[in-house]
Image (cartoon, rainbow, N blue to C red):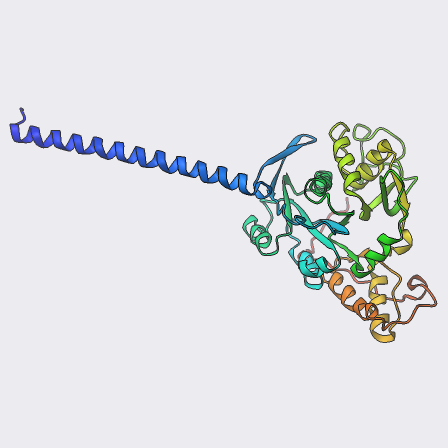
Length: 372
């Protein structure tokens, strides 16, 4: 069957129109892609601190800040201390407790800054990445790295925090590393910092000193360490990762040394012990300001509220109560107004409290188990 002349021209026109449409669409997409690349490049150049860039290799990963907020310390030359707070991805209640009692502006009045250190947790059942991104946009205090949240990954998080401190807040006089399940009497921290007599080298750590500790070789134990992971019989002297004070300069040296020192998953032992010993960092013991049980903090709260007795505790665990940071600091405001009397006996000698256990989001499960 042959085409008529009319049908031939109609087919030719259709082919030409289709060709024009294809060319137009291709040019449009090319221009859009070109514009997008320019916009990305301009955004990166205008504020590189907030982009998801690779900032260096940490052990076996190329560290990227998934969320950064790198402008936290910009244009401030009078920062007394930066708090780097290791926090689990889904611990939104704990972070909220800390923010409610000390907002970002409240901390600025004390010449403090604070960032929360997170990893990624795509499988978390309670909080998703979008919610963490929204939290970051609202408060501007989240620093998130491209590693999975896991107990054995805490060293990544710890080193990331020290790296962030030296990269983005080197103008702070001190760096205070703490965990988000630790309660700190924030108003008393400046007095603590003023009490330090720094060595001429400036390399120091102040915290709860732990010594004569040894690796546990029992496989059933949570803290089991294999000889391949750590081949010595004892750990070097180190300070608890609950709360310790150092400087941006010391932080930078620790980060640099971590690049050539074998990874070890117990983060405070690794950083404040193994690395610190190699750098000959001097340790200061401030354990007299610590409580090892949350009940002591609750006793302090009751004594302040009922008797206006001052509290001699600066640092302690929250015992699973995510609101204790708020309650403790709220009570201590009474003493900060000079309305409290000095204690004649320490809280450790007078505290009588009920042991409370907080199970968080977990649910009790009752099951039958065969014993043999």
